[in-house]
Image (cartoon, one colour):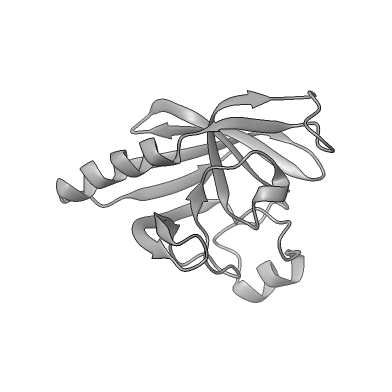
Length: 150
């Protein structure tokens, strides 16, 4: 199974994009600020450009598995081996305030529409739906891969 996140809209606080599963649109995404990090960079370079809790993970390709999150106390998609980052998950949320490097997933996006103190946000979590898709792939012995692109 191939999950692709295409980063499309960039601000000083968030990155909004679209998620595709096997090249078919699935939902919208929201991440922290994209600092143009790339998985091919060495880890020390990534860490020197990263700001904790407010930086999107490097673009590139990663394996995704389902594991129990100690923080959220539920099974969630986990993105493995992200240089310079730990505990990266894919989950529901609305704004950059709900992510610390994680990828948020939702049904709708709102650009330049105020939601509290933020202007760009997403709404209507698709986390459960995504977990079902990943579970199907795992049951079919498929490797689940996440690719982050522009």
